Image 1 (cartoon, rainbow, N blue to C red):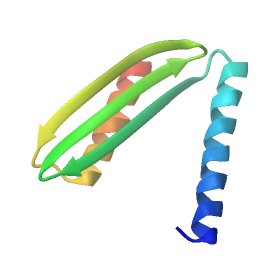
Image 2 (cartoon, rainbow, N blue to C red):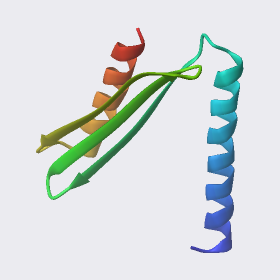
Image 3 (tube, rainbow, N blue to C red):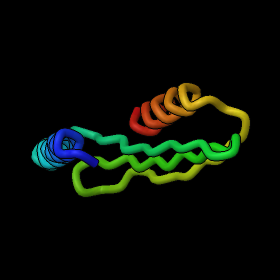
Length: 84
């Protein structure tokens, strides 16, 4: 990883920390954290939903024959469904 990539990652993580810290100051804020990966046509979705200091939900889903875009849309849809 070169210097520019390291700086981009540092900025990215700083922004994520800021979002999380701000959510702790406003208890009405919920955060949906997801990670999706596809390997050998086997997709895994890990999803956490936090509100203030409470974990509202955490789940892992597996599926096969799905594109990464479909996986991202599923994560967004599932996160919204859990929060609302």
